[in-house]
Length: 196
Ligand SMILES: Nc1nc2c(c(=O)[nH]1)N[C@H]1C(S)=C(S)[C@@H](COP(=O)(O)O)O[C@H]1N2
Ligand SMILES: [Mo]
Image (cartoon, rainbow, N blue to C red; front, side, top):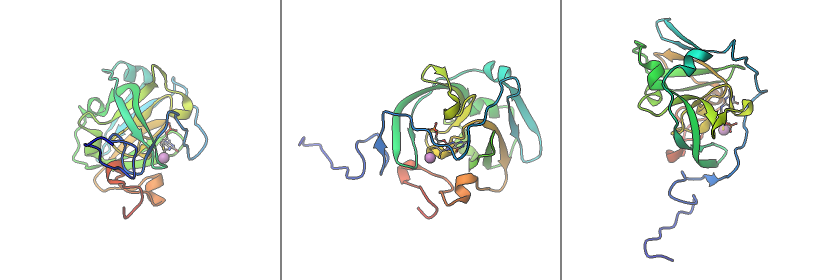
């Protein structure tokens, strides 16, 4: 055993949050059927607490500055995947012209899924609407045409088939949060369920 070794009984290495294991696969976790969205009908809508709406068609999203984040992702069911590569538009870009005093966001998906997070967690280069994974169009089962990617929180916050985000003055729980999952979901603090 090397002199610097410190036991990490609950994770396999320094890059893994507590209680997580590494998988080379990309498991599919969906609470319902995969919705099919035609690109011609696709739109993304940001709605403020005051009722203002900012809309992007598919072509408009493609015309925005694109980023290629490489990030680690962590599912609450305990698998983690390191160094995943994506392409999409930063939420900083989408929020740049939006005047809001809201502190919370409720993310909506085609198909009806919802998830909530503080608006600040969508800022600071930490969240994207992504449409490519591993140098290919995002497969439908992983959320294509486009999904939210918020890798610093458990992956249930990364809504697949994202359709829009509603900015809220009061926090409002989404699908899994209503079912007992943690309101915030920081994998490094192991915030899996309410009360963690
Ligand atoms: N619209 C939608 N988004 C979703 C889900 C879902 O059921 N519907 N599942 C969440 C959960 S629990 C996880 S772990 C990840 C899984 O993403 P993946 O199927 O690409 O691995 O998507 C999240 N986003
Ligand atoms: Mo999950």
